[in-house]
Length: 430
Image (cartoon, rainbow, N blue to C red):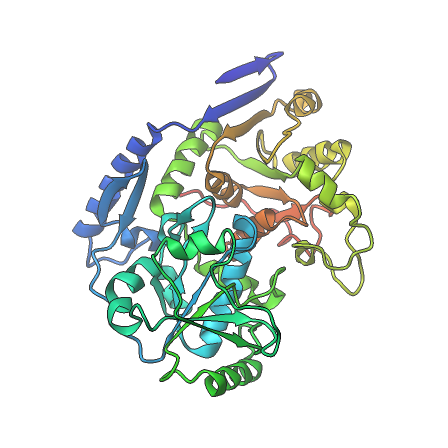
């Protein structure tokens, strides 16, 4: 729906429609044919190399490679439940868990993300790019091809991080989402074990990672414990700064990326655009009330030096006046006439309409039940302003850092060296 206000600022909403699936199908059918016919040529888009098999399931397009049956890795496996918080928190845990799996030199089983149900990792992201960092396998493939023989029913152990001598029970399936997560793969545990071992691996820190591996190998040697099924993620939240670069191996699944590109074409028509992320829900407002003075609060370490500056309310829940001013400055900085708003509640559309009238800026937001589309659009923007405390913004920031795209946060300067890559660069659109 397109509404024009005073013939100057346009507010557009594009509800998610099932018809967008057909766009994806058509788009990737062409892509698949291109890949097959040019199999001997060097690929210009790494993500396109998986566009071979196409089918539609549950209203979404899935694209992947015809794959061989996986073989057993004698170095062992790690399973975990990404069961803390929503997508942003789970994504941070995923990055840390990859570093942990690499430190232990065990194959990571790619657990599904958890919403109100299990959503397969491959529904959101490509699997192959992760293998450039470390060995991985989808949980579906692991359970179908490897578990029946190597991790059979009756011999499945679960592992809990807790005091070994405590009276607390190690129950991997107690409560929601833990129980439904494992039930999604019909997994019950025949034995559970407690451990107090180091779990916070740092990418590239070989001495520390060798110590972590040695401790785990001594307590749980791979020949006796080939599969480590952990109750939660072996990673901290907020994530360790040193592990942020692992984000570069997360590439969007073709179906999601194509759907987002379709919306981008409708909204921006090839023009430059600024994307902003607003957390304005009542739950977030409450979470930000007493944040002043806290050094480390949720994802806040991404935008300030912990030893020099504490988190403040303006970082967490910026006033409307600042949001309008900061956004206007970003639009003028890069000469953009398009603004995209992603929000959990209030978008401040009317306020933007009034403030940006003189700039003739078009304002857009999606009415979508899949926040991944918002993530793609924010990740691809010419400039991005996020919420310092939000792990949802943190995902976007990491994605953009890996692609050398400029970003900043509310209550931070547009060219703050802590948050932005520096002066704006006009990126070639492909």
